[in-house]
Amino acid sequence: FHFYSHRDNGSWAMHARNPWLDVEERPYVVGQFPWTGFEYLGEAGRGWPVRGWTGAMIDSAGWPKARAYWHAAAWSATPVVHAAVHIRERDTHEPADWSFPPLGDHWNPPVREGDVVEVWAFSNAHSVELQLNGSHQGTLRPSECPNRIPVFSVQYKPGTLTAIARDAKGNELARHELTTAGEPAKLAVAVDRTPIAADGQDLAHVTIEVVDDKGTRLPHAVLPVGVEVVGAGRLIAMDNGDLANHEPYPTHRRHTSAGRCLAIVRAGHTPGPVTVTVISPGLPRAEVALRVE
Image 1 (cartoon, rainbow, N blue to C red):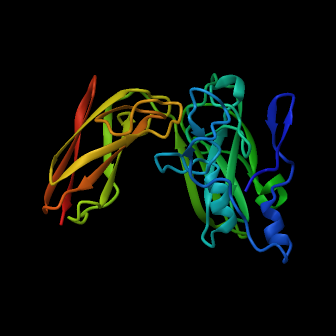
Image 2 (tube, rainbow, N blue to C red):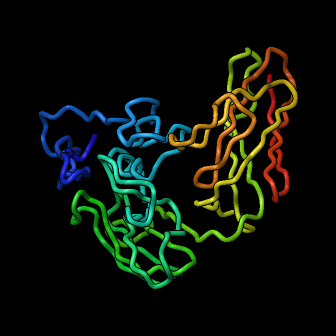
C-alpha cells in the first residue's frame, strides 16, 4: 500500500485518494500489497545517516507506527481508534515519506501552548469524537472524510487528548488517549513473553522506556541505556527503531529513540531464571525477570 507518489519540486507528494479503497469498492481487485510492512536495512532513500527504508508500518524494533492503525481500521472487524499528531516538517528532523506525513503518537508536539495542531484519528467506527482535557473538540465520521481519516484542528494545551470511537447511536466502542509527558523519572521495563523454551534459540523481547512519575513515556528522550542479563539466557542484541542510529545491534548499550529501546534475550539450553537489569545515568535501575523452561 502507498498513496501513489511522484516527485514534486524535490519532495514526495501524497496521492489524493488511498488506493486501498479500490479493494473495498471494486470486486475485481483481490487484495492489497503494502510496501512495506516492516522497516529493513538497505534502500535508504533519505540518504546518510539513514541506513534503510523508513516508510514502513512497523519500525525495525517491531513497534507499530501511527500509520499502521490506518490499516488496522481498514481490515479489522473489531472497533479501532488511534489518534496521532501531524508533526510539521519544519518542526522535525523526520521528513515526510511516500505514504504519510510525519505523525507522532504522543501529546508533546514541538509547538507552544495555543498553537494549532492537526490531530489524525484512524478508526473504523461510525464516528470519532475528540476531547482535550475532557472538553469536546468536535466529532467527525470517517466515511465523510478524505481517505476516511478524520482530521481535527486543535489548539495545543498540555494534558490528555482522547479520541473516542462511537457507533451510530453514540455508544462508545473504543478510546485512545495521548497524555503530555513530564520530566524523566524512571525506567519502565517489560518482557513480551515468559517462560521461553530452553532450546538455545527461543527469544524474549524486553521493552525499555523512559517515563515520567506517572508512567508516561517521554517521546523525545534520547538517553544512554545499559543492559545486563544474568541467569539462563543471554543478551544477543539491542535496537531502538531508529535507522539513523549507528550503534551496533549485538551490544549491551543503546541510546533510546522516542524514549525507548529494545533488548533481545535468547534462552540457553539449561532451564532456570533470568534477570534483566537496566541502568541509565540519573535514573533508578530497573529489573524484569523471566524463566527458561
